[in-house]
Length: 79
Image (cartoon, rainbow, N blue to C red; front, top):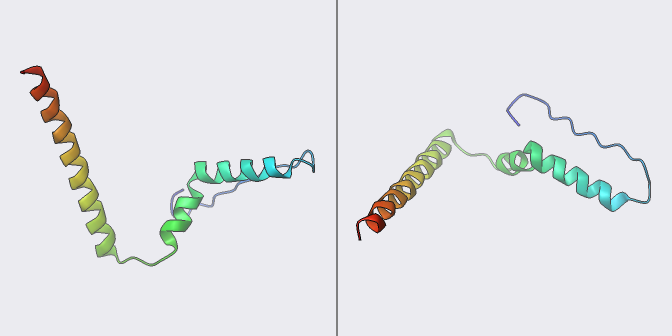
């Protein structure tokens, strides 16, 4: 779900007795569209510097994991 674009989730009721199934279907659609993640992210205000710092740290962690995998791959081949 991107910023500024509305997210319409529509579920039709066919049988009133299957209310639990309807709730599960609604939750699934919300998770798939990213609505829950967006709400959780916007729950508290974060400064732009904080978000940039988190992105930088995540990128650094990702590259470290990638290099570890790469090193392990070649370390196992030459033993």
